[in-house]
Length: 479
Image (cartoon, rainbow, N blue to C red; front, top):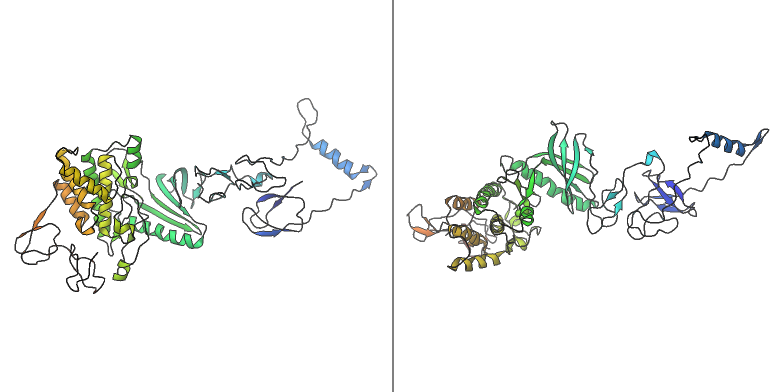
């Protein structure tokens, strides 16, 4: 018969075969090895004048049993039977098994009230769904993070109410701040088993908190309240956003587009956030702007941008700016330079244009191929594009350009054209008043600089003007 032992390290119970006494085993919960103690020998029975002690003990046991309604004695409860099937996947178990050989579920024996730890923790991965022992943070089968049980109190103040979203790095919960008037909050939970991997993820997590704090004055950015980190677990406590993301809403409505007037207003608000981020020193780029990272509030008009976890700064030195960045992008919304790990501020303008296109048409963008499609539609007099918003789709086409120098130079410029409801094509030189094509770096008449300074040349380190394709100092190709 298998015997039940308690791990000397984590104190959790387990079943082991009866022939492993004196051998070393690894605990299925904490993975620590330990020596299985030898079974205690049975006590020798001793006789007395009134009979054997064993008979006295047996009589005492019977006398101590509770009586049922008719006064008869109730037989003693037999110990729980060893399961023959895995409670998670239903696979037949081998005799004396301490874990399911199919799904890896660890069998935990119930040894009394001290071991009551709640129901098994079900994996949220739809391709897995295995039941895990209570208290586990990662699924023992697929390794995905497991949700924390509802009602858990973090730091003695944040009560987790329900799971909102599960991802590869952790989860997002709706929670209550019990020390701030029961204020509703959202808590992003990030865990990691590998210390090196956790350290990398923690840097992104901390950066997200810092970026949110730097954007505290922006009405469409959630407020951050707290950052908690203990061991291999970290939590980001933020403003709770009541609503659904724009992609979820579109898909639920058969990919029906939003009114273009609403999309234009949302674009202006997003431009304010991007302009603030790009104006930091060094500039901060979002890198993952898309409809599913924008929430529509309950008034059906206001929005909130969420998930700044992939944002990062471009670096202060030429070497840092030119170094390859982590390749973070969503296909269809990312320009070529970001896909190869060389993003810049204008990469966010490409993602903004792709997002506006998706919201206004209900069709997912296909990167700069969408720009070519729009170009053909704008040239077609029978185009299905609404005549009053042709300027809007022209603005989108320009910012979906493959070449970064063909796009607008800043989110501020995009907002200005969204407000004027037109695409600016020419601007006068401030010195000689000659009209130049927009985004021309130097006046064609007097050579007066017309655009802002760009990043320094990677070859000579000197600055040029945005829109310049070659360095005016050394002739090196820019971009």
